[in-house]
Image 1: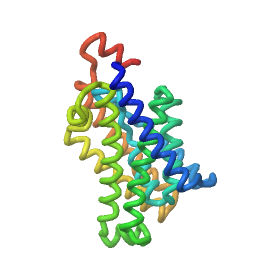
Image 2: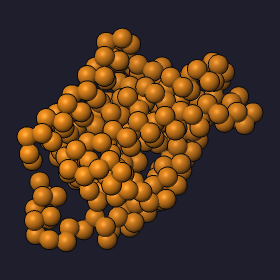
Image 3: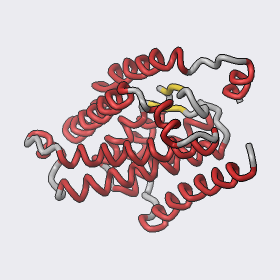
Image 4: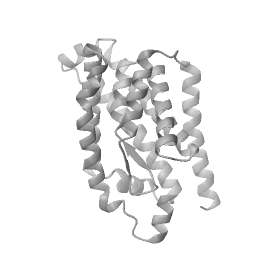
Length: 242
């Protein structure tokens, strides 16, 4: 990588990580509880359902469902902590990503969760989750999902664009330009609402209602990316395996 793109890449990663660190400094770190342990395990499980994207060795996972559910039912600082730690654990331990990539992904996920949580809290007015769902008050959910999606996809799009020396538009088109991405993301967020609602009413067993749909969504992503994610040359295969 040339010197200028490397500097830009470092600046973007540094900005994302610094922004996440600032949010933790302002919000504080939550005390460990049984509830947080449950959400940590759930988010790690979602991270294990992952798919490699065509450009930049980036990945996408079904953890967005659990991350979104967590931001709906947990205080902002707790949701941020759970999703940040789960991302690091999954990407370093199971996906074998370099620490810097795991830290960046954890930071951008933290920002996405914080943005979604802030909008949901502001628009919901403190009303119980079940009342919002039963009353078809969908604006808080839609706004939170949109914020999470834009921050998450935007952060990944830019880091891939800089790393691969392509335009952000091209990076978005190749990794997220398919209509299936928007459809699958919407389904994941919908399942997140379902999970959060069940969690609020019947507890942890609610996770069972979203397990199979998430596996199917992940399989659909893998089938969609099957052709486009295959490296066509030995150089591409070696670079993607790194």
